[in-house]
Image (tube, rainbow, N blue to C red; front, side, top):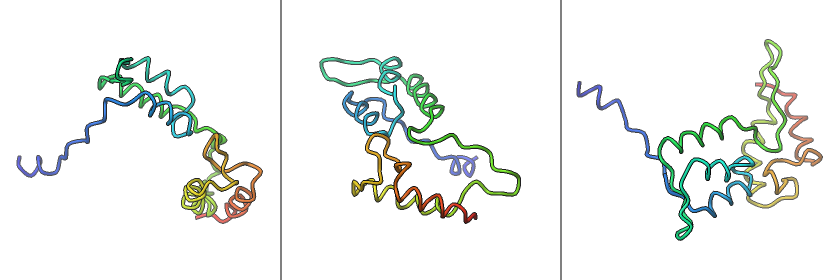
Length: 135
């Protein structure tokens, strides 16, 4: 029994209190999908005097499930690759590292509204051509 308890680690407790401004900023910065603020306010209590949004664990779970079902802004839907062709290319691997760096440096290839590569940018063109190399 002791070994079983040692292998089961408790989950981290979610933060159930957030400032309204941090929720709005996450949506505005593209870190959360459009409509995130409204969904949060629909499933939590808002205290106008402190400007804090307080969730119950059930409300927090509903909001997180909603976020998981939303498309990421600025990305196309992903189709299933034909059998035998992996959907992950070398360009995706490079972009996973380079895009956050470009975002942090506020480079022009990043769309500030979505935080993703602009479809017409040179960076996106390089990513597309590198994606011809599959893992």
